[in-house]
Length: 186
Image (cartoon, rainbow, N blue to C red):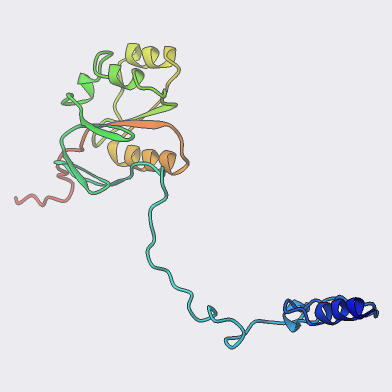
């Protein structure tokens, strides 16, 4: 009998807020477990210690083109001069001078990639230019979609595709110096 009384006494003094006794009643007596209770600064030692130490770029979020100029591109803080091929995770110099130099040979590096890219974005400079149909047919036969645009729009399209985690690459030719704002004197 004394063993039963000792067990009953120990179970009623549980430190977790549970009462294990033979009498009927609520099993949870902690005020923190009720539905209407809100934590305040005195309830939780970590209540006022919420901090953000650093915001990191998501892993695998891809390469982003931050800016372009007639001299080249700023890609994730890397300054790239002249035409470039953006093949995540690499940035390469692309040996083309203008849209006329985009040939089957110059796009061969895009279809040799593994894993295979889904879409290739070609930036042809300040204006949208027509690419040789044989180049487009070659890429289509390799299962690569091609989007040909002027370079400013190509940069934006590439950034959008990589933000959606698509397997995209870009071949970009910097736009020439704009003369639209130059004033002519008569």
